[in-house]
Image (cartoon, rainbow, N blue to C red; front, side):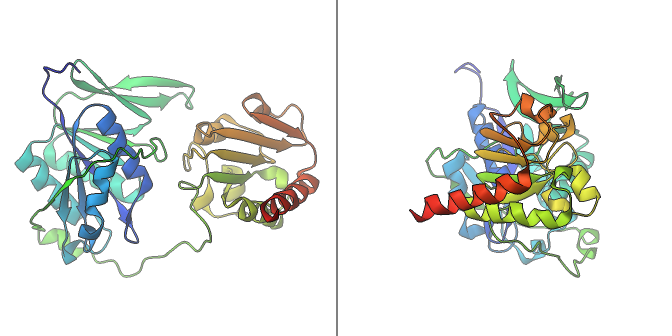
Length: 327
C-alpha cells in the first residue's frame, strides 16, 4: 500500500477465555497491523474492560468494549447484534476472526445480516491493489488458492494457529460501546459449560508438543508421552486415528480436521506422517520424529529422525530431560 492510499478500516473480533484474550485472536490482530490496516479490536462480555488496553500492544490502535452482562454466556447471537451495529455505524471494510466453534457461528450469522461475503479456513492474508486477498488450502492442503470478496465488508475466518501474536508496543484507545440485544437473541440460555481438564498449556499455546499416533500400540502408552511433555513443560497431542479410536480426547487432535499448531518443538511419536496430519503441524519450529519404520513418510519433513522403539526411547529421553533440568 502506498503512503497516499487511505488506511483500510479493519475490525478484529477478539475472543477471550478465563479473563484473557485468546492467543489466536491476538495473532490475527498482529497480522492485520502488518498489512498496514487501521486496526480496531472488539471485545464482548462482562469484565473485558480489565484487559482491553493490553490488546494495543499487538497492533490495535483502538479497542471497542461491549462490557455487559447480556454477553456473559458464550453464545453467538447477542454478539452478532453488537458486531452488526458496530460495522454499520463505523463502516469497517474488513472483519476478521480467529476460527473457533463460537466465531464460526458469529461470522456466518454476521455475513447473513450484512449481506456480505465470508471466506473461511484461510492461512494467510495480503493486500493487492488495496483489495484483501486470502490464501486457502485446497487438494488436501497440497496447494494454496487465492480467494477474494465481491463487496465490502470482507469477512474472514482464519484457521486456528495460523498467525503468531507479535508484541509491537504502543497503546490502544479503549472505547465502551452500547449493547443492544434483540429480544429473540436473548432467548438462548447456556445451562452448562464443560471445561477441559488438563494440566499445562493447551496445544495451541504450547511451545513444546509431544504427539502420539497408532504406533504407540495402546491408549495406556500415552502416559509415556504425558511424562515427557511434563518434563519438557509442553502439551500432548494426537493424530486423528488415535482420537477416532478413543485413545485420547478430540481436543488434542492435530491435523486437517483438528487443530493447527506451530510450537517451537514438535516431537512426533509413532506417527506415520500422513498429509492430513502434516498440514496441522508443519509450521513447527523443529520437528523430531521417533518411529521404528525407517521409511515412514514423516521422516521426509522431520528435522531430526530417530529410528527405533519409542517404548524404549521415550522413557530414556524423559529421564535425560529431567537430569538436565536438575543439573
